[in-house]
Image (cartoon, rainbow, N blue to C red; front, side):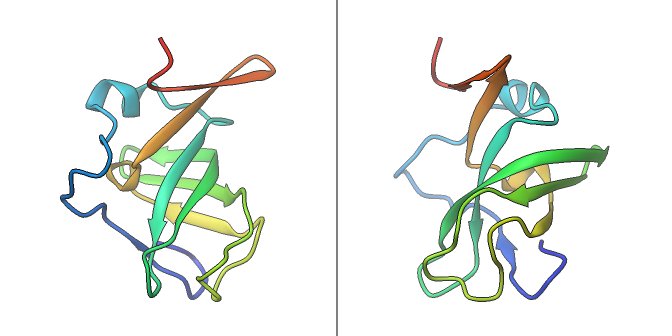
Length: 103
């Protein structure tokens, strides 16, 4: 979900990528980057920096890249999403970021 006009959609059940595990999602903290699928003609995938975890189902972030397809939202927009919307994670480790698949 987005507070403006754009809409985050739940990840489709496809085999083109592996969704994060429950444990990986539970490890997400403020400052981490998460990738979400935003509604649009092609379901654009964009990075969001987590800024607040208000409850287990109500997380907020700031859009961390400029959309190419989705016109209703811009870089830096505040985004409301559910943790199950996450399709990829880049954890922040000090000044560095690492992917959930980097072990």
